Length: 166
Image (cartoon, rainbow, N blue to C red; front, top):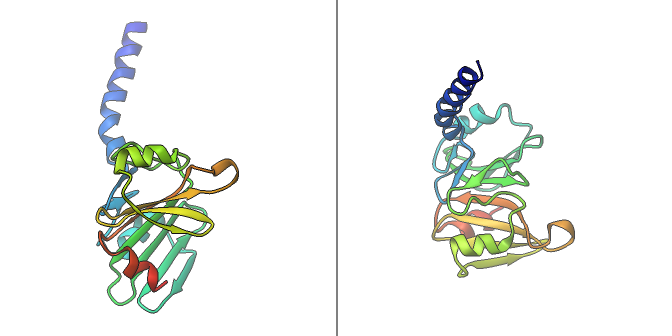
């Protein structure tokens, strides 16, 4: 009887792996985050995340925010093409390099992506790997000091042009 239960559990685990791999929890620099493709259509993102709660137009872009989900998505206003996906404070979504999530230590980011990055400082330190299309917001105080607060995937080489017009 126990052997039969073990076989069933093993089968469920093995057959469940492909489903888990397709769940969209991967974060790939310059390509996708949480199943949302950089370069994809904003309507595809809405299909994954549900109705937008907050939407804000800027000169060139529209920001889409789901406050009860860890996502902020920026798309071109005229085409609806996704140019940036931000995932905030979530352990559910991991980078394909280093398995970095919200709360990971800054040293893991440097070990995985290198020590050559641009920075932008404000309330957080933003480690920008522009040629790769990925950035990490690192906390500067309190419990999150030195920890990843946000993972940002964007069109490679376009960090300044995207963020300058926000």
